[in-house]
Image 1 (cartoon, rainbow, N blue to C red):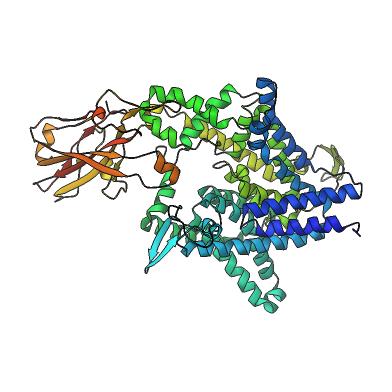
Image 2: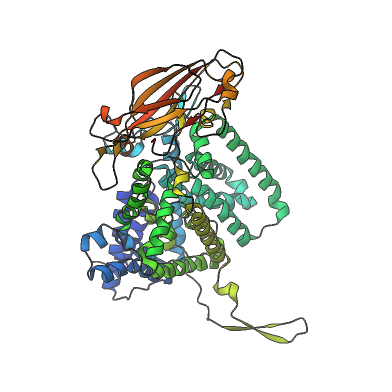
Amino acid sequence: MIGKETFHTVSYVFLWLFLAFSPFSISLSQIFAGLSLLFLFLHQIKNKEQPKFPNALLFWIGLYISFLIYPLIEYQQIHWKKDIVKSEFGDLWMGFLLLHQTSLTNLQKKNLQKAVLLGAIFLVLSGLVSLFFHYRLAPYVMDGFRYIEGKRLPHLLAILNGISIYLPIGFQSTHLTYGGLLALYLPSLWEKTFVLFQKKKIRIHFWKVSLVFFSFSLLGFFLLFLNQSRSIWIGFLVSFILLYQNRKPSIKKILPWLVLGIFFILAILIIFYHSNWIFQRAIDDIFTKRSLENQRIWIHKINFILVRENFLFGIGAGNYGERFIDSAIPIIDQFPELYYDLFITPKSHAHFDFFHDILLGGCFAFFFFLCFLWAICKQIESTQNQFLFSIGIFVVFIAGSFQCYLLDDEVLLPFMGLLSILPQLRKNRFDFQSKKKDQFGISSITVFPIRKYIPISFGMILLWLFSSLTVTYLWSRTDEVDLVIHRTRTKDNFPSPLSQLSIGVAKPVPLPPNTKDWYFKLSGCLDKEVNLRTKPISRKKPIQLKILWDKEFEKHLPSSIIVEIRKRESFDQDKEYKVHGERVLKTILLPITGKDHLVSVDPREMLQEAPEFVDFGFWFAWEGKEPYLPRIAISGNCE
């Protein structure tokens, strides 16, 4: 016989399993989350209960319904697969996890926090394993604990005493997803550690347990640092300001720890920056607009084109990729040399949660997203003792200015899971007027106590979102022609900064004294004319550049110049995360005539089906003691 609370208990168990095992498998977490909802609905049907919808869930539903306004207006009908099943709208069901907010008691939610704590420990342990494991854990386990040739390998961070250290990603497919999970789960470890160390009696009697949790907290912080999710770093920095505002601790008590923490973090940053090229690239990409590793400038340029054209109703669910290509084609027609940059730019989402929703649902999505944010902030701030535990929710909102974490199922599901176990709000009467006495004892009336209904965290995150939109807008206004750059590389394909200075400059570049030879590669241009929806055809104009000979620097210029005509593969290797294959087609010894050297290549002489790059290799040699690199003039399209 099925009891009155049987289905509710089963739903609770599956919710516990979902929260604990989300760091391991998205498939398992989806199954557990779906089953928890199924048995919740069965419980309500059996007991003839009406589901109670929290405000946040109502706003979430409104947000996703706004994604369907454009298809209804434009096509007069909804296409089941395109607009619902295979689009962003398909994530609507995850929001229904918020129904647990009203179905669980605060004691049950407190117990479910232990599942989050266990998930945090699993997340740290899996991150530690992936730190030293030669293969990616998820495919390795799914393929029967064996490595299949051709599977993507983890990124090597460093080799210390013969031990390889890799970018930690746990059981996730990308470091960004792992960073998002760290943001959601680590605060539960930190809160547990804080509670244990805060009470003297607990610290004395359970010092071993306290030490274990403290160790896991430090390891989690260390993995967060090594993971290199810059958006999550920024999210935590801003969220700690919110935490300080909420707790308001004595500045005298926290100042020594704050100074020590900042010094420790800066020391690690400096050491890693000067010793690890992957970390150096991660930092440098924050401050550069023209990086092949960071295509956000193109994403945001297209985003603002789309929002200008569709600001009222948006572009609808499932349409971002196609509309991105529609807007990119005119740019490529005007600047063919930008084809590759736009080709490898991710076209699945806007890399900005708030912006992506506005693009899909227009003004309606704008309204519902802000209402959803307001409801969450108000609930977290009303539960003072849950603020540190829930700070990862703020981190995701803030980090979403750089990524679409709320489109990533692996992050969105536990995000909704954390929201579902937030304690219920206390019911307060919505008074527009409240009385208080002034210093003379006279009662005065204050209209609408703003702090009570507009949380501080909501205002700060709102300010952050609008500031981010402003910065990305100004960033996106960079002219397309200024984004064309021919990069220089060493023979091992690392950036060559000194060589880069010789491209398109006003005078030759001095090299270190007594340099006798210097080699670098210069990325050229595509050998085909192609657009995002056209087949490649061989270009008719030759690919060429000039080595300029400045008379006033003639005694410092090379005494020997060898030029390689190189071919470099593209496209297929990017999709498969493989290194581009390169080959030298021919080598030219240029005579030193005292005049400019024109290097020209006819792309029709090197026919192949797939588009490839024509690059150049330069080998300069000097006899004098003060060598200068000659200037190289090359146009955007190498014409």
